[in-house]
Image (tube, rainbow, N blue to C red; front, side, top):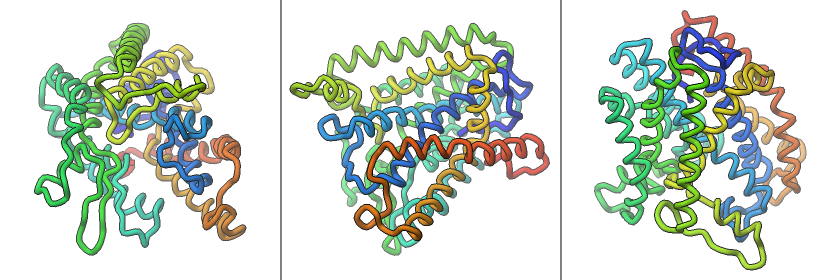
Length: 393
């Protein structure tokens, strides 16, 4: 999620005085639309058992493609959070930036534990799901500690973590190990026992994401007002191509960076699905190369589209990212419970649709109803600078 307040800038040709670019918001907004599709699957299609939505042998191809597209969300959100943190720091002191990152991080972590976990999984659930909002909050707090380093050192830290964390994959600790809780938070997706019969599920181990947010902060100067748009586009085009070529070479080698891909007999489609089936929890090096490389090229595309209506529309979603995230999940929960109360269980013990095509229909149908409240909040946030708590949303 973005951390810097500011008005929505419709043109990508020049940064606003606040350092805000519509291309950043539009890119964030684009992946939010993809995220909506994935969350609709978890609302209306959860009755379909999916052990792994990118399993090349068993996944429904349409579901696989939607999940692959949604894989862009977390990496782009988090790298842009680092960018936004740098832009905030360009207008504030180091102490002010650190204080803001820590406060915003704590707000995100609290929202995950006390609102989103109960909203999405039920107040009676004994499990606290530490998902992407928790992860971003932790990353912001860690970034607050790191931003005193020279930018080159921060870039080196980010590269070391992103490229090297898969070397830690063999380290698997058991719950009786005194370091288990810390390691489960950092790199081992697991369940942490808590008092009163509660458990915490570390869906998003944070170590690789700390590397991503550090890299985002390190490239923040590319978005300063003095940097020409075309120069930034050339940089991101070069970065995107380099990341994708590196991904292809490492994936073809079938060695370091993720689990091996394989050939599925008599199915070129499922063989291709295997090639792009990557590990997200925690994100592998290859996962990050593919998603961040694609994100860099998408940013170039959005900048070159200028102030076209679609860019401005996407920028509205990306201009109030946390509001959209909380609002759309709340709407989806209300829709689900309303449908269940009206029609009952249509798929086993839950309400659901029988065909995945309905997920696409719902996704298209909800964009406009979600757009207008998000636009209202974005305008409110820009116009009411006197309301301090708004900048934390």
